[in-house]
Image (cartoon, rainbow, N blue to C red; front, side, top):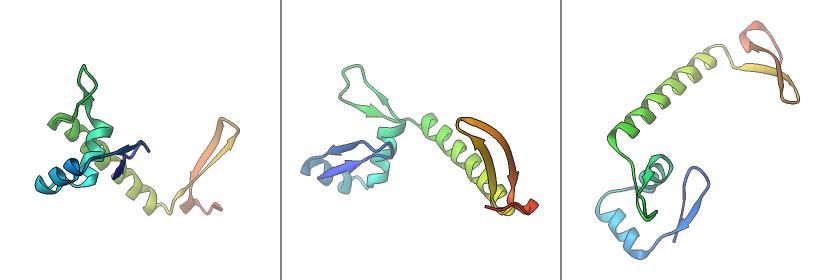
Length: 98
């Protein structure tokens, strides 16, 4: 079996891992979050995510969700750029085209 984290990393896992995930009610998304947010030990054979890491992640998600909802109320946004240079931005409620 294999597992893909949010960062796109694909890792194989053993039947033992599948069994333990089921026994411990750890869904694949929990494993992905641990791999993406966690800290590796000195030997590089374990990664752990702690309460404060998850709290910070949840806080960031809530902020992003609030920003997305605000942008949705404005019917979206448009950013005009030239290559790597941002020229201007406006929200769609101002009558701009997509």
